[in-house]
Length: 216
Ligand code: B16
Ligand code: MG
Image 1 (cartoon, rainbow, N blue to C red):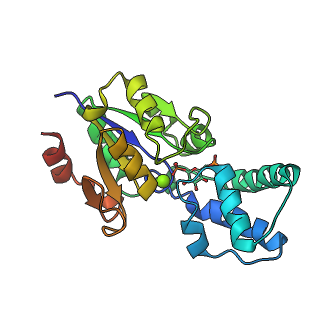
Image 2 (image 1 turned 180 degrees about the vertical axis):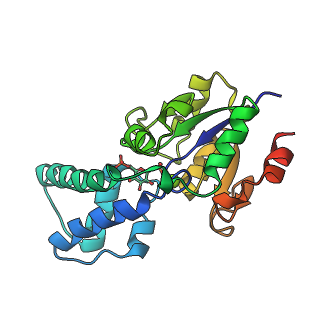
């Protein structure tokens, strides 16, 4: 049967979490509190606005809407300064091989990301024109674990949800894929991602053997 893939971006195609971390940490420090890598875990897959709310809860800081808006702009400017330096070298191991495999087998793929910067990031790493459809943070009104982002992706690919395979590193993303009635592949900790249909430790798990079994 015909199938399609829908990929999350951060943590699956590239590791932009490290750049989000640098920018969020600077923002927290400027407000007078520490922001650790463990804190950063809480922001993975979460929208920009919600991320700031979580960060402010960590620092126990209350701000006006205007102050929040200007901090979000500042944070994104710093984040983009890192993104602008990205190259194809930052595509996670196994992903280029996977996309080649899908191309050779005429399997379409879309992006389903919470990031409003997703098209820029794909352009920087040279993958923008390879995706049949892109759904990013500008297209969705409901964040993961709501299935909206992946359902729009399936629609754009003209595929039934049950024939779509979602690749995700965040629990909320796996929940979104499951809620969309799609097959889910979790990338990361097996205990954390146990609701996924399949779990791979990291992106090197996309071997040709794994793909053959999955697709046939
Ligand atoms: P932006 P994904 C998510 O990307 C990130 O994991 C999350 O940390 C970030 O806050 C969110 O995008 C929004 O990103 O500020 O660029 O709009 O994992 O859904 O690809
Ligand atoms: Mg992610």
